[in-house]
Length: 427
Image (cartoon, rainbow, N blue to C red; front, side):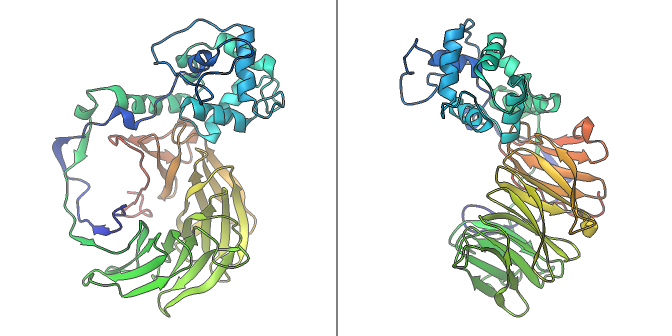
């Protein structure tokens, strides 16, 4: 387990043993619910030529059950000009996203694009004044904004609302019984960002304290080895043979700002056996394929790259997202690469003919207007995702149009990591 107490805890527990203890109550303040977009903007209007009071763009947001009448055209045009910050005469996706953020509406880049598409009747990629006025003359209730979401997104949005507002939530979901850790190791002086097994008795940990450390489970008083780096470490993955690992950095480790990843050789004790070029921003995710042939990685600027693990040369760019990449994963035999991130989508890319690659599947809004924090393959046809909608979901890639085949509920906060006991057998 990784935690912000800068230590490593080792747990032994059975996932099949449950108790009658219920899920703990949650604080409503910890959840950002879907705010009434229209009513918030209406409250901001104070007449022609007037700016809204206070320092916020849209102050004085109302409760969800508070209603107002329709706004006239002059009021709507005033609100339009507030959102159109560059005075271009059109609202683009970035301006709309900023407006949603100021209103406190939970959203992702993908969900913002869907809202924009609903308003942009001429399909030119921006919202003109007449489109804005026409749309908001009809849409006057928060429920109508909720209906812009797909049916699957609505279902998980409703779950988040239940977590925040339903007092009976804690009586609905059982949680596994608490299991104490076998060991707690004071491993690092900053947050532990990754931990991976090298074999049945040794594991490696990577931290924001700029070190990778190797530990022996039977003697954890001090590490077997420690490797120092000039940058914080944001991600790490170990090859299946346990002999080497790839490390992703928060800052470039060379003078030319080209190196954001390197290979650490555990056998020879070399912290930078090879340096991998290609990224131009922090690497938040990296993964080594099970056959140790490829390295996939995702960056703060939304790029997903594929490197040859033997030559450490870039093979291909698999994806370019407008938002941060949170996780990448290889399917068995390295035929597919899945990536997810802050734009809310999961993209699966076929690399079987690398360096030629092609997109295979896309799951829009996999975390229901929230960030998708992790994606992992399960068997030949399935993937699992988790994110800011408090849900873990299982998808069949052959039937993505039907939505997830199973969801795992009970969490009362974002789920950031999925670990499978054996991703190959699919059980």
